[in-house]
Amino acid sequence: MTIHRVNDLFGPSDALKKKGIPLYIQVKNAIQTAIAEERLGNGDVLPPERDLAKYLDVSRVTIRKAIDELVKEDVLTQRQGAGTFVSERVEQPLNHLRSFTEVMRDRGKETTAKWLDRSLGVPHDDERHALQLSPEEEVVRFYRLRYVDGKPMALELATVPSHYLDNPFAIEGSLYEILEAQGRRPVRAFQRIRAITLDDNRAQLLDISEQAAVLYIERTGVDKEGTPVEFTRSWFPGDSYDFVAEIHDTH
Image (tube, rainbow, N blue to C red; front, side):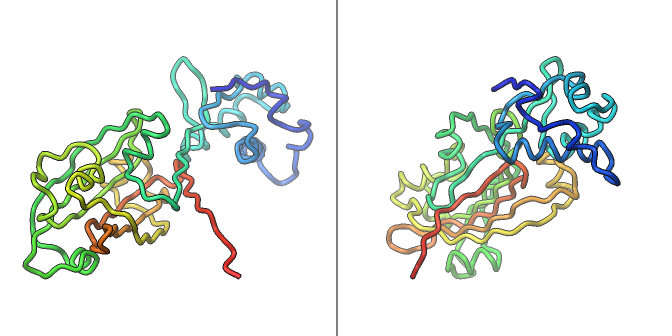
Protein backbone atom coordinates (compact mmCIF):
# COMPACT_ATOMS: atom_id res chain seq x y z
CA MET A 1 0.00 0.00 0.00
CA THR A 2 1.28 3.46 -0.94
CA ILE A 3 0.03 6.77 0.49
CA HIS A 4 0.27 9.54 -2.08
CA ARG A 5 0.39 13.30 -1.83
CA VAL A 6 -2.45 14.85 -3.77
CA ASN A 7 -0.17 16.89 -6.05
CA ASP A 8 1.52 13.65 -7.19
CA LEU A 9 -1.75 12.40 -8.63
CA PHE A 10 -3.31 15.26 -10.57
CA GLY A 11 -2.39 18.10 -12.88
CA PRO A 12 -3.23 21.75 -12.22
CA SER A 13 -6.65 22.13 -10.68
CA ASP A 14 -7.90 24.37 -13.52
CA ALA A 15 -7.63 21.34 -15.84
CA LEU A 16 -10.73 19.97 -14.11
CA LYS A 17 -12.91 23.01 -14.79
CA LYS A 18 -14.38 21.92 -18.11
CA LYS A 19 -17.58 23.66 -19.07
CA GLY A 20 -20.70 21.55 -19.39
CA ILE A 21 -19.34 18.58 -17.42
CA PRO A 22 -20.41 18.23 -13.76
CA LEU A 23 -17.51 18.71 -11.40
CA TYR A 24 -17.96 15.34 -9.68
CA ILE A 25 -17.68 13.62 -13.07
CA GLN A 26 -14.46 15.50 -13.75
CA VAL A 27 -13.07 14.46 -10.37
CA LYS A 28 -14.16 10.87 -11.00
CA ASN A 29 -12.46 10.91 -14.42
CA ALA A 30 -9.29 12.37 -12.91
CA ILE A 31 -9.09 9.59 -10.32
CA GLN A 32 -9.69 6.94 -12.99
CA THR A 33 -6.96 8.50 -15.15
CA ALA A 34 -4.53 8.42 -12.21
CA ILE A 35 -5.27 4.69 -11.83
CA ALA A 36 -5.02 3.97 -15.57
CA GLU A 37 -1.66 5.79 -15.75
CA GLU A 38 -0.47 3.87 -12.66
CA ARG A 39 -0.01 6.96 -10.52
CA LEU A 40 -2.36 5.08 -8.21
CA GLY A 41 -1.79 1.35 -7.94
CA ASN A 42 -3.67 -1.64 -6.58
CA GLY A 43 -4.37 -1.21 -2.88
CA ASP A 44 -3.08 2.38 -2.73
CA VAL A 45 -4.91 4.75 -0.42
CA LEU A 46 -6.36 8.03 -1.70
CA PRO A 47 -5.43 11.30 0.00
CA PRO A 48 -8.04 12.55 2.51
CA GLU A 49 -11.18 14.16 1.06
CA ARG A 50 -10.29 17.54 2.54
CA ASP A 51 -6.89 17.52 0.78
CA LEU A 52 -8.48 16.51 -2.52
CA ALA A 53 -11.12 19.22 -2.20
CA LYS A 54 -8.55 21.91 -1.39
CA TYR A 55 -6.15 20.98 -4.19
CA LEU A 56 -8.84 20.54 -6.83
CA ASP A 57 -10.70 23.63 -5.62
CA VAL A 58 -14.05 21.90 -5.28
CA SER A 59 -16.31 21.15 -2.34
CA ARG A 60 -15.98 18.04 -0.20
CA VAL A 61 -19.50 17.15 -1.30
CA THR A 62 -18.21 16.98 -4.89
CA ILE A 63 -15.28 14.80 -3.85
CA ARG A 64 -17.55 12.51 -1.86
CA LYS A 65 -19.98 12.10 -4.75
CA ALA A 66 -17.15 11.19 -7.15
CA ILE A 67 -15.75 8.67 -4.67
CA ASP A 68 -19.19 7.18 -3.98
CA GLU A 69 -19.65 6.60 -7.72
CA LEU A 70 -16.30 4.83 -7.97
CA VAL A 71 -17.06 2.72 -4.90
CA LYS A 72 -20.34 1.61 -6.53
CA GLU A 73 -18.35 0.60 -9.61
CA ASP A 74 -15.84 -1.25 -7.39
CA VAL A 75 -12.98 0.90 -8.65
CA LEU A 76 -12.44 2.12 -5.08
CA THR A 77 -12.99 0.41 -1.75
CA GLN A 78 -13.73 2.12 1.55
CA ARG A 79 -12.63 0.63 4.86
CA GLN A 80 -14.07 2.12 8.01
CA GLY A 81 -11.43 3.98 9.97
CA ALA A 82 -8.73 3.30 7.35
CA GLY A 83 -9.69 5.39 4.30
CA THR A 84 -10.43 4.90 0.61
CA PHE A 85 -8.33 2.46 -1.40
CA VAL A 86 -7.90 1.51 -5.03
CA SER A 87 -9.63 -1.85 -5.42
CA GLU A 88 -7.14 -4.60 -6.11
CA ARG A 89 -7.27 -6.20 -9.55
CA VAL A 90 -6.02 -9.65 -10.36
CA GLU A 91 -3.87 -10.06 -13.47
CA GLN A 92 -4.54 -13.49 -14.91
CA PRO A 93 -2.51 -14.68 -17.90
CA LEU A 94 -4.32 -16.48 -20.68
CA ASN A 95 -1.11 -18.06 -22.00
CA HIS A 96 -0.71 -20.48 -19.07
CA LEU A 97 -3.15 -23.14 -17.93
CA ARG A 98 -3.43 -22.73 -14.17
CA SER A 99 -6.18 -23.38 -11.67
CA PHE A 100 -7.83 -20.53 -9.76
CA THR A 101 -6.13 -21.71 -6.57
CA GLU A 102 -2.69 -21.82 -8.21
CA VAL A 103 -3.02 -18.35 -9.76
CA MET A 104 -3.97 -16.80 -6.44
CA ARG A 105 -1.39 -18.74 -4.48
CA ASP A 106 1.35 -17.37 -6.77
CA ARG A 107 0.15 -13.88 -5.84
CA GLY A 108 0.26 -14.56 -2.13
CA LYS A 109 -3.53 -14.58 -1.86
CA GLU A 110 -5.58 -16.76 0.45
CA THR A 111 -8.39 -18.60 -1.31
CA THR A 112 -11.47 -20.11 0.25
CA ALA A 113 -14.67 -21.47 -1.27
CA LYS A 114 -18.34 -21.90 -0.49
CA TRP A 115 -19.91 -24.98 -2.02
CA LEU A 116 -23.13 -24.22 -3.87
CA ASP A 117 -23.54 -27.66 -5.41
CA ARG A 118 -21.61 -30.91 -5.65
CA SER A 119 -23.59 -33.54 -7.50
CA LEU A 120 -23.45 -36.62 -9.70
CA GLY A 121 -25.65 -36.99 -12.78
CA VAL A 122 -25.93 -37.47 -16.52
CA PRO A 123 -24.38 -34.71 -18.67
CA HIS A 124 -26.38 -31.85 -20.08
CA ASP A 125 -26.11 -31.29 -23.84
CA ASP A 126 -23.35 -28.66 -23.56
CA GLU A 127 -21.36 -30.82 -21.14
CA ARG A 128 -21.77 -33.93 -23.28
CA HIS A 129 -20.59 -32.04 -26.38
CA ALA A 130 -17.60 -30.42 -24.64
CA LEU A 131 -16.46 -33.62 -22.92
CA GLN A 132 -17.31 -35.94 -25.85
CA LEU A 133 -19.47 -38.21 -23.69
CA SER A 134 -22.37 -40.51 -24.40
CA PRO A 135 -25.74 -39.59 -22.84
CA GLU A 136 -25.44 -42.51 -20.39
CA GLU A 137 -22.08 -41.55 -18.89
CA GLU A 138 -22.06 -39.76 -15.55
CA VAL A 139 -20.39 -36.50 -14.64
CA VAL A 140 -19.63 -34.71 -11.39
CA ARG A 141 -20.49 -31.02 -11.09
CA PHE A 142 -18.62 -28.72 -8.75
CA TYR A 143 -20.28 -25.33 -8.27
CA ARG A 144 -18.34 -22.99 -6.00
CA LEU A 145 -18.22 -19.37 -4.97
CA ARG A 146 -14.51 -18.55 -4.81
CA TYR A 147 -13.15 -16.00 -2.34
CA VAL A 148 -9.81 -14.21 -2.36
CA ASP A 149 -8.72 -12.76 0.99
CA GLY A 150 -12.36 -12.98 2.08
CA LYS A 151 -13.83 -11.20 -0.96
CA PRO A 152 -16.07 -13.03 -3.47
CA MET A 153 -14.07 -13.09 -6.70
CA ALA A 154 -15.50 -15.80 -8.94
CA LEU A 155 -18.32 -18.23 -9.49
CA GLU A 156 -17.09 -21.52 -10.91
CA LEU A 157 -19.07 -24.46 -12.27
CA ALA A 158 -16.77 -27.33 -13.26
CA THR A 159 -17.94 -30.59 -14.82
CA VAL A 160 -15.68 -33.66 -14.87
CA PRO A 161 -16.43 -37.23 -16.08
CA SER A 162 -17.01 -39.23 -12.90
CA HIS A 163 -14.60 -42.05 -13.87
CA TYR A 164 -11.64 -39.64 -13.56
CA LEU A 165 -12.25 -39.02 -9.84
CA ASP A 166 -11.85 -41.66 -7.12
CA ASN A 167 -13.87 -39.79 -4.49
CA PRO A 168 -15.37 -36.60 -5.95
CA PHE A 169 -17.28 -35.69 -2.81
CA ALA A 170 -14.06 -35.47 -0.80
CA ILE A 171 -12.58 -32.73 -3.02
CA GLU A 172 -12.00 -29.44 -1.20
CA GLY A 173 -9.08 -27.61 -2.83
CA SER A 174 -7.70 -27.34 -6.36
CA LEU A 175 -9.50 -29.54 -8.87
CA TYR A 176 -6.43 -29.46 -11.12
CA GLU A 177 -4.24 -30.85 -8.34
CA ILE A 178 -6.73 -33.70 -7.83
CA LEU A 179 -6.76 -34.44 -11.57
CA GLU A 180 -2.95 -34.35 -11.61
CA ALA A 181 -2.88 -37.01 -8.89
CA GLN A 182 -5.11 -39.14 -11.15
CA GLY A 183 -2.79 -38.55 -14.13
CA ARG A 184 -5.51 -36.49 -15.85
CA ARG A 185 -4.44 -32.90 -15.33
CA PRO A 186 -5.33 -30.68 -18.32
CA VAL A 187 -2.31 -29.61 -20.36
CA ARG A 188 -4.24 -27.65 -23.01
CA ALA A 189 -7.51 -25.79 -22.99
CA PHE A 190 -9.91 -24.04 -25.33
CA GLN A 191 -11.43 -20.89 -23.87
CA ARG A 192 -14.24 -18.59 -24.91
CA ILE A 193 -14.58 -15.23 -23.14
CA ARG A 194 -17.39 -12.71 -23.35
CA ALA A 195 -18.92 -9.92 -21.26
CA ILE A 196 -22.42 -10.55 -19.92
CA THR A 197 -24.77 -9.30 -17.22
CA LEU A 198 -25.84 -11.56 -14.39
CA ASP A 199 -29.14 -12.74 -13.02
CA ASP A 200 -30.04 -11.48 -9.56
CA ASN A 201 -29.00 -14.67 -7.76
CA ARG A 202 -25.45 -14.78 -9.16
CA ALA A 203 -25.06 -11.00 -8.71
CA GLN A 204 -25.93 -11.35 -5.02
CA LEU A 205 -23.44 -14.16 -4.60
CA LEU A 206 -20.65 -12.01 -6.09
CA ASP A 207 -21.87 -8.97 -4.12
CA ILE A 208 -22.25 -6.81 -7.24
CA SER A 209 -25.20 -5.04 -8.81
CA GLU A 210 -27.40 -6.97 -11.23
CA GLN A 211 -26.51 -4.50 -13.99
CA ALA A 212 -22.74 -4.85 -13.50
CA ALA A 213 -20.83 -6.49 -16.33
CA VAL A 214 -18.95 -9.71 -15.65
CA LEU A 215 -16.54 -11.78 -17.69
CA TYR A 216 -17.94 -15.20 -18.55
CA ILE A 217 -15.40 -17.84 -19.50
CA GLU A 218 -16.06 -21.32 -20.86
CA ARG A 219 -13.04 -23.60 -20.78
CA THR A 220 -12.60 -27.17 -21.98
CA GLY A 221 -9.40 -28.71 -20.68
CA VAL A 222 -7.78 -31.74 -22.32
CA ASP A 223 -5.13 -34.04 -20.89
CA LYS A 224 -1.82 -35.12 -22.45
CA GLU A 225 -3.65 -37.79 -24.46
CA GLY A 226 -5.95 -35.17 -25.98
CA THR A 227 -9.00 -36.33 -24.03
CA PRO A 228 -11.37 -33.67 -22.63
CA VAL A 229 -11.35 -33.96 -18.83
CA GLU A 230 -13.02 -30.77 -17.58
CA PHE A 231 -15.64 -28.32 -18.77
CA THR A 232 -15.65 -25.20 -16.61
CA ARG A 233 -17.86 -22.14 -16.71
CA SER A 234 -16.70 -19.15 -14.66
CA TRP A 235 -18.13 -15.73 -13.88
CA PHE A 236 -15.63 -13.02 -12.87
CA PRO A 237 -16.45 -9.43 -11.78
CA GLY A 238 -15.21 -7.42 -14.76
CA ASP A 239 -13.62 -4.65 -12.72
CA SER A 240 -11.54 -7.02 -10.58
CA TYR A 241 -9.57 -8.81 -13.30
CA ASP A 242 -7.16 -8.07 -16.12
CA PHE A 243 -6.81 -11.01 -18.49
CA VAL A 244 -3.55 -10.71 -20.40
CA ALA A 245 -2.06 -12.65 -23.28
CA GLU A 246 1.17 -12.55 -25.27
CA ILE A 247 0.48 -12.16 -28.99
CA HIS A 248 2.94 -13.02 -31.78
CA ASP A 249 3.10 -11.83 -35.37
CA THR A 250 2.45 -14.84 -37.61
CA HIS A 251 4.03 -13.29 -40.72
